Length: 305
Figure: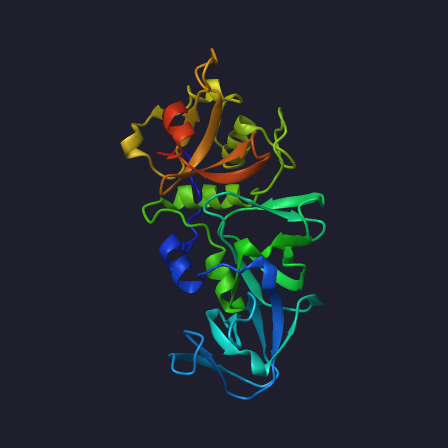
C-alpha cells in the first residue's frame, strides 16, 4: 500500500488561463513602448469613441503587439490588450528590460527556447504549452526569456504578456478537477521534467525514453514498475478508455510493431498525457485525440489504488 502526502495543491483549468491571458503577439511589429502622458487610455478599439479598458501612468511601459495603423498601436498593458494612441508612445523594437511575464500558447505542442532570436540558432530547451516565462527583452520580434534557469529567445507569436502576479497560478498544470491527491503529486513531479531531452534508453533524470520516463516518475514514489512499454502493460490493472483517470498509464503501438506496446505516457486528464516523445525529442504534453493516437491507442493501466 502506498502513501503519498496530500498537499492541497490548487490547479488552474485551461478555461481560467484563457480568461487571464488571451491573444497573440505579432512578431513583425513587436516592441516596447514607454508612455509619455499621464492617464493615457487603453481602448478596446482603435478610436477615441471606443470603450476605455484602463489608463496608464506617465513613464510606464506597454508591450507593442504589432505595427501602428491609423495612429494607434495594438498593445498589452497590465495583461489587458487594446489600443493606445501612437502620439504618446515611444516605441523601441530592440531592448533589454524587465517586461514581466509571458504565457506560452501553442495549441498543445512545446515551444523552443533558442540561443538567439531566430530559428537558425541552437535550441536551448523546449517549454510546454501553458508555461509562464520571464520576459527580459525583445529583439527582432523575439522575446528574450528566462525559464527554469534557462535563458534564450522565444518567437513572440506564441507568447502572451501577462501580469507577474498571475504567473504562479498560470504555471500550475491544468489537471482535471477529479484528480486524486496522489495523482496530483505524481503529475506535478512529472511536470518538472517538461522539456527534458528524449534519448533512447534514457532512465533520467537528465534524459528519458518513454518507458524510462514513466518508470522514473513512479519509482520516485515507491512503485515497482517494469522498464519497457510492453512490460509495463503487465503493471497495475486494466482501465477502459472511457474511465481514464489522472495518473493512469496510456499505451500505444506503432503499425508493424510486433510488441504489445511501442509507447507509454501518463494521463493527466482532459484528454492529455505527459510523455517523453521521440518525434519532438522532449518530454511534453500531448492530446489523446490526434488522428495518430486514436489509431495507435492500445489500452491503459492503473497503478494508483
